[in-house]
Length: 188
Image (cartoon, rainbow, N blue to C red; front, side, top):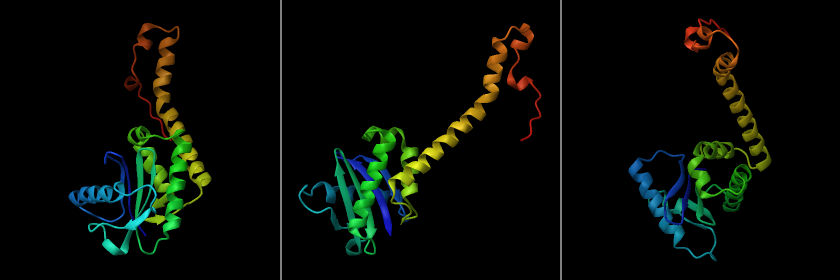
């Protein structure tokens, strides 16, 4: 089972933190610091698995990570997970981010945190892996984007109608009306 997913940059600044077990905020910060110290001091030539730190379970837990450009992607898992399977999952996560953001960078993780969390939820939920196919995840993201656009169009319709009325050749009294002045009893 996945216990935590951490993404931070080379300067130890967290860019994504997702814990699937409850820890106090203080313990979470200590885990992030300890994990960064364990992973960042490793040479690029060594394997990408190591035992978890003392705060996140010790010998029974593994830190599985990949280092891409300025970001470390770290999955903390228990001994029941396959290390190679999690490495593949990290690759799918990064490739999906890259496809959704077209050459993903650290700023995408900062300014589009909601979309990054949505992608992560399509990948795994509650510490369990849900989907490993990048194409399926991207299809769900596209569906979500379409729904968001539809909702934006529906909520903007009354204001667009009022703007259109104001642009028409109508008496000034009608043009000065506000949407709240109209007593519309619309039922959907």
